[in-house]
Length: 500
Ligand code: NAD
Image 1: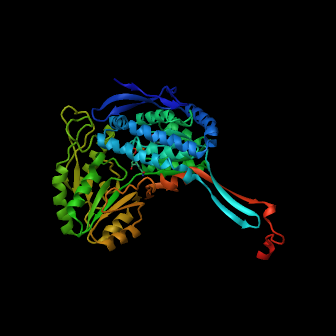
Image 2: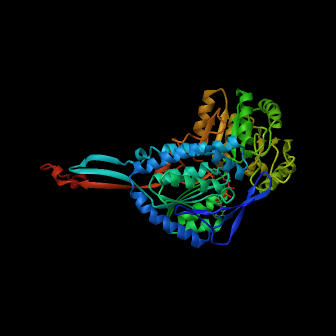
Image 3: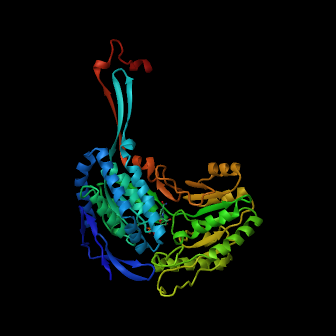
């Protein structure tokens, strides 16, 4: 049975009117399980216009009241945790514990937004001059947009909507057309939590809908997460249309393993960070960089049995599984092609995950785990973000060589070092040109009261996602300089001439 999906506009499910749809697949079976409408330019413009109307009252609502909506929303997310995780897994294919993690990491940002009044309060200078006070306030931008990827159907929409809404904006959320259902359900829960109709509009679509957002004059800011080429495109078009934009892109995350590292712990971490969620995480480790031939040989010996033990299957499996299918048939095909290119270019394919088939799920998009050793930086498997269950080992002779490799990589989302030496760890954290660094920690996604963001080609624009940066991104600062003459004492008028 296929589900007919909708948009969520003015607090209601609305059928698509463009006549264009996209199939929502079940990645475990390869079957169509739903149809999502793709909005036309007119549909998008209409949703934006109505959001602008709704924003007026919402923006004028005091921050504490807006924060109370977040409190109720957080409570509802908790109550519906299993249902939301199931929605995530059904369309994405990730395991249920991973689906729950997806919701949980989003919920943590909602929790920070419960304290938004503190983040939104301005600054004050008393007696900046005779009778003069200065104060600044953070005001909402108006209508903002969130454009999100398939790989975290709950977490990233929540990272976008919670800070944007609690800051007094209305939001147009354009989720991935491959996994749209979680966003639609979250919009229903927000309504139940007390969000006025029209303040969050979930408008489904593809490039046409995105371009309509980028060209619409009412949209004040765009928060994007997805692949690097699209991030760069969206940043350019949004910025040239005068919008504030922060666009987060792809990654190629390296983990350096020093000779003094606990190699069992490093191997465990690499298997979790490399293959979890089928490698479809922007913070996945896809490159292991052991320092020294001996470290590399030992690490390989520890990795191989662990990788061979990985269990791959659908999220509905009664047996425990480590990861599920990749998102589409095209993704599977691309990953397998890239593995082939690694072989052609001379890398040592120690474990080959191609041609993986699961009884009863022969048409699912499953890819077995692959492990390459002796990968060189010029190879395609090193240069491309594979976004699949493939780990490459690049051997480095020295720490400096491993650091240089990490720094020369065009991406800069996350990185990690495994070592027992504090000086090396500290040196790495200081010098590496990557936004998020783990020390004996493989996936250093910062907690929700810090902020998340990569460097180099992993992010375009300014400020990070969630935490204090999100409140800066979703508000504009106005500074008032006020003079009250009763405060000026006799002869106390500031003599500006004296400053010349
Ligand atoms: P994607 O770039 O294909 O799609 C992201 C969004 O952009 C979707 O909503 C999609 O509909 C839209 N889109 C796609 N093509 C477009 C086009 N030509 N014009 C306008 N809009 C377009 O990304 P994806 O495959 O959904 O997600 C995976 C990517 O996201 C990976 O590269 C991953 O590393 C990255 N990612 C980055 C972060 C981060 O914070 N840096 C987090 C998660 C995922």
